[in-house]
Amino acid sequence: MTGNSGRRFERWNSVNEHEFFRFSETEQMYKNMNLFKDTVLFEYSYMDRRLYLSPNAKGQIDLLTFGRILNKHRNNAPQDGEIRSFEFCLGKMGEPYHWCSCKLTAQWDNRTEDPVKLIGKLQDITGLKAREEQLLLQSLKDGLTGLYNKMAFKYRVEEKLKVGGSGWLCMIDIDNFKEINDCYGHLAGDRILMQVGGMLCDIYPEPDLVGRAGGDEFVVFTTEENVRERADNLLDRVERMIPEEKWRISVSIGIAPSTGERGEDYQKLFSKADRAMYQAKQAGKNRIAFFGDG
Image (tube, rainbow, N blue to C red; front, side, top):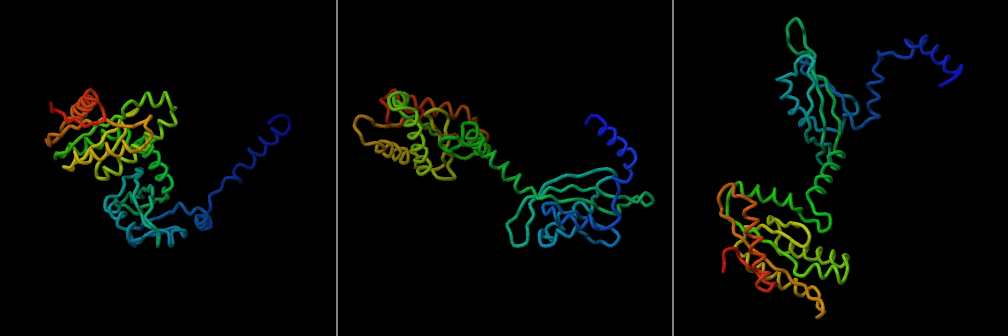
């Protein structure tokens, strides 16, 4: 601000500052919490063993569930000046469970060195968690096909390898995909990638893992023994995708068995499947090769 108006503001501020800042001595501000339904205030009194909540908590939270959560902190109260923060799932009456953020601290009696009150607030962060989950899914999934991306697929397979058990890693590569892109454009290529991705999800449903390794390469990890039968099914279905004689689609598939040993190295397994896939290409494409055969 400039000129006389600025001086008037400074004068008002210096004279009336103590009138502007006052702490409420009534319950009205506490009752105004009703206007902020995503935030609930609470106090637990050790003397009467009773939990007090702001009025807007009524009908919003499952008190039994929250009571069980609070018990852990009641019996192990925060130290003087300590503020605890944590998140948990809490149910609303008649609604699905939702996420809450909780902050709490404790008031202590200096004479007895015992806690007097637990004081805190609950805040509904369901929307925030939903956005975090959406971002996490976006970071795990390939943007075009919706399959696991290369890093997410690696992580999921490594989780399975940690506990051991037999399985098969399949590498699938679309034959002559560069020529398809060059002749018919990238939109046509994208449609083929999405169609092949959809076929893989049909042939290898959960708990099998399906991912896109990049470009025109896909990866599958399955624990089912009929891996050859399903790979043959994929070859047949891909061949029938586009019936025109001048434009045939095919894939080459390399398959490597896992050892079943706990903590098997994923990168070595991936490399074996990759080498098997190139064997299939060198043998004429549109076929299956198992690592170690021939």
